[in-house]
Image (tube, rainbow, N blue to C red; front, side, top):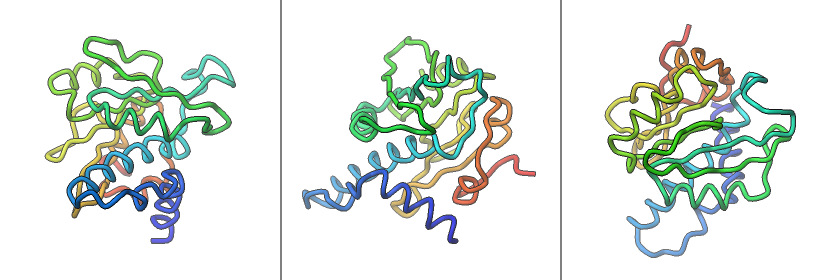
Length: 187
């Protein structure tokens, strides 16, 4: 429980408390804003809880690159969040992926609901590469997804496919696994 609270506190700090400072425009609108802000914060904070192989970077000062497909609103929030921030002493940059654009050169790939039928292609194109793939599907974790966001009681939670991470040569911290809703492939 202490680990869960510590990770949640890190996420809240990464968001700068933005979820709680939204104008009272309406409950539904505030909930929608909070969801994409929380997901953007998770994407940034995942960088601190996942270890990539050295070969995933061009050099010691190469940036972490987070690609976003199928969610412009999350991409915009991520741009604001990562502005001038670092993770593991590396700069962090984001890249929006448009239809037909290759998911190359990424460390994290977020595929939102808006990606539709293209989602499977982006996930498949990163198979066996050291790319943390993150999706948002309520019914089941899509094939090729390492982490999947789900909404439970109006809260953003996530499931982890540990075997998928290992196949991509990614090591996920036990602290992150400890706050996951579900971990598939755990020993």
